[in-house]
Length: 209
Image 1 (cartoon, rainbow, N blue to C red):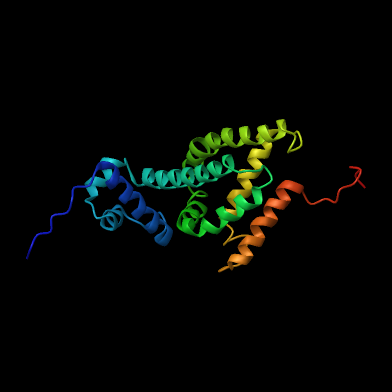
Image 2 (image 1 turned 30 degrees about the horizontal axis):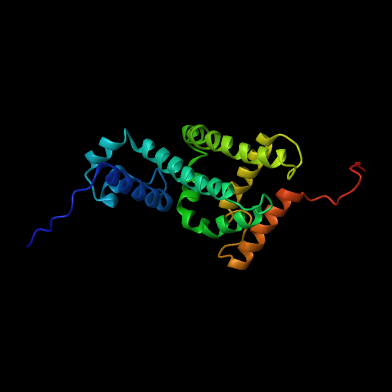
């Protein structure tokens, strides 16, 4: 039998293969239902290679979730920074939501495992949310300085916006019906953005009845 010589994988490529394999297995079998042998077989590496890159299985879970969210929110904030108008949030939300199905495994893993692993929640909070918050806060503060958004706490607005986007990420399990059509996704994205920009109250003198 002929031996096929495959090109050597770099350390970064091997690490990426492990993380991709882990994401698929954790989404399909759950964290507890996945062994390190499963991970090694799926990634096409020896078990020892897993532990050369990660201290244990929990470290792989945390890295999968953290890197996944960093990529998603970096894309979102990059698109925000390139918007032609501060009122184009609906368009950004629609485009982001239309692509979220590509991250279904990540959302499933986070939704299932974060409730059982406080260290996973803490890592996402520290490595993702807090770092992204500063970028989002600066974005909204600039809009307020220009008089486009009303003056209020930019940090609060940033948290609401990122929270809104996170909920949209779980839309298939929460606010949307399964197998929603592109039109339904578009309507939901624009509705969420409209509520964010304009609220739900009719304009009045501001009094509370």
